[in-house]
Amino acid sequence: MYKVWHFFMLGTMYLLLNTFFSSCHTQKRIIATPAPVKLKGVDVIQLFDSVIAHQFNFTTLVGKADIEIDESGKEPVSFDINFRLKKDSAIWISIAPLLGIEVARVIVTKDSIRIVDRINKVYTARDYKYLEDLLKTHLNFEIMQAVIIGNYFPYSKNEKLKSVYEDSTFLILSTLNKHQVKRIMEDKDPTKPVIQDFWIDSNYKINKSKISDEKLNRTLEASYTNFFQVSDKLLPQNIDVSIVASAPLKIKVRYNKVTAEETTFPFSVPDKYERK
Image (tube, rainbow, N blue to C red):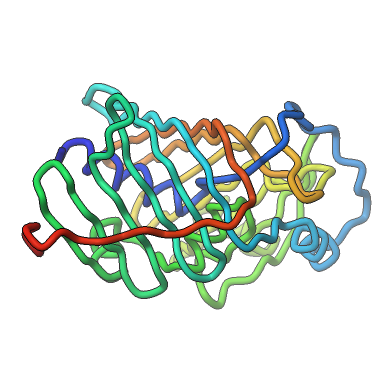
């Protein structure tokens, strides 16, 4: 159980930093490959406002997903999860790696992460400081919720998008201005800022996100494909995350079913379970 939970924690939390759950109720696949960008002369504010306007809004979501985690030097691990979301309130996850039998249940709120380990009969409660120390990175409920539904989020509280660039298919929103880009390319920037980039397609959806932290020598990159439509919004079905660090990690998420419906968030701890 520890191995499954260890891989799940790594996969879930890293993925929550760059993207994780998305949703769709329809079987119609809208976009497999983004159309070329046709937005000429767009500025940062205009593009950012359009991205925000096309974000997904919800009250509650229910879904299932297959997850595969490939950590350097170890055998890949695959397992299934069920998840439920309540906007600005809770993220509920049930881990069922074998034959649909639940081995752990997790509920994430604005101030805590609580875990019931059904194999070892252990209940664990942690705050975000624990996760930040574990992952060596900033993390809170707002970031987790944003990436769970594929929306924009600022990695640093006071960081703002400052520039927009074009390539053959996307417009790229970046937290660096052009002066900073030049200094970094010339290796003359002693501050080594964290760089956050978003690749935006012609539907104003994020198709790739990247966070580069030179101080920690870490890069996290996620790509999103096979977009679905729900409530007139597009969300990715497939998510591939690559983490370049001292221990490289790759994560694949494939969503099987997601519905926008009312739900409950059952979470109880048997009296006999050990508390940690």
